[in-house]
Amino acid sequence: MSLTPTTSQPPVDLEVKDFRVIFKPVWEDLEEEVGRENLRFPKEIILLGGAPGSGKGTHTKFIMTARGFTCRPIVISELLTTPEAEKIKAVGGMVGDKEVIGLLFRELLKEEFRDGAVLDGFPRTQVQVECLKLLVDKINQLHNEFANTPLAIHFRRPTIHAMVLFVSENTSIARQLNRGQEIAEHNRKVAETGVGRLIEQRASDMSDETVRRRYRIFKEQTWTALTSLKQLYHYHFVNAEGPIEEVEENILKELQYQSSLELDPLTFERLRSLPLADEITLHARQELVKRLDSYELEHPELLIRVVEIIKTKFIPIITRHALSGRAHVNSEDPIFDDPMAISMLIDIFSERGFHAVVDKHIHEVPDRVDLTTGKIHTRTKFIYRIQIHFKGSKIRRG
Image (cartoon, rainbow, N blue to C red; front, side, top):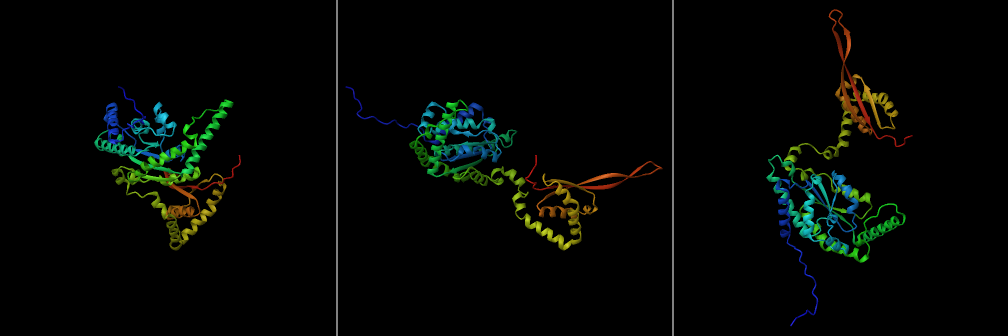
């Protein structure tokens, strides 16, 4: 007698959720495939995350420029191009962690990413976060292992930034639907006129139900994963609701250089005795005012002479070069043999909104000839070449 089930059962989710089980075989395969000495990962990794429609694709190039990256971004969704992955993405779902980790790690080993890489859309799950932590641990182990070898430069300590572009649910949904409509309209015009190129249409951008589902998945899974990075790496939370220029300004503020966090400890110790530019410029105006007042109180006669030379000799030349914003003045006035006079000149120009640079050139000039011996006697002549830079006129005539 045969038995037939009276009810159908849903398919069992067989995806592995243990991050150790996922990570171990991926790492072992990589090591066997390329060799341990070739497990060379980026020095800097920027994890770029955010809700659908938050502008990750829009702002990726700007972020890379800000960090000096010349490679292409690694867009996780573009790595996942298997038929199974495409089917899942088409309905707003997420591809499994095992596929993501395997493809991503291999991509990171490519030489173009040695100095840095932006990962658009990673990590999206807590399993991916844990695998990332294991990867960073492995890279640090490699750093220690190769520290005193000729290969050390290829195994630097990694710097990890997590950047989250935040938009509200309403903004996310509106941007996804608008993106779908704009691409559909563009492709329609291309089909009608034959002018231009078709743009890939995301099926997930075409229905209200799908875009809402994508945002719900983001909030339920990805948001938790992204916020967990706050305790692990340099974390940047960027308000991406506004116009592009405003978001870019927010990004720049978040990515300000922090050498103590990014440099190798030995390198940082070597450089830390040198002041930062911000430290020097913080009180620069106050120090300039103090110096100028001291000139007036302690060296008034010299200050009067320097001001008069600037007024009569320099300003006319500067005026003639007002359009370019750059003037060059040569002077042999002996007043500048006094270093105090040069300091005054530079500070006076700074106070008036100019930037002056002074170069001292020494020339030996023939002075007389000894008719008995034929020896030529010379005298030393000092020429002071002063470059003055300033904001030129915006009005130019062609």
